[in-house]
Length: 69
Picture 1 (tube, helix red, strand yellow):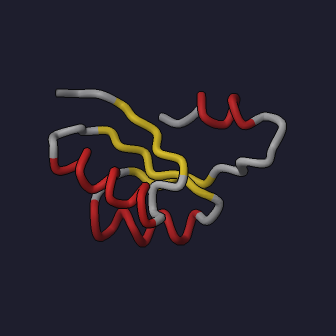
Picture 2: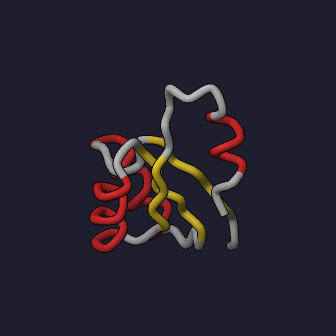
């Protein structure tokens, strides 16, 4: 299975559980995103996934999400 999935809030309580489950299930490209790149990086070192910072209040949120590769 090679699917890309973006989880906004992926290092929080619910998002973290979802991200861990997806990585464990075999999704090879789980992008863990949130306001803090540092927090996303720390989560991904422990649980897997690719860290990404996103500003959910930005006018260009859709463009930011589209560049998650």
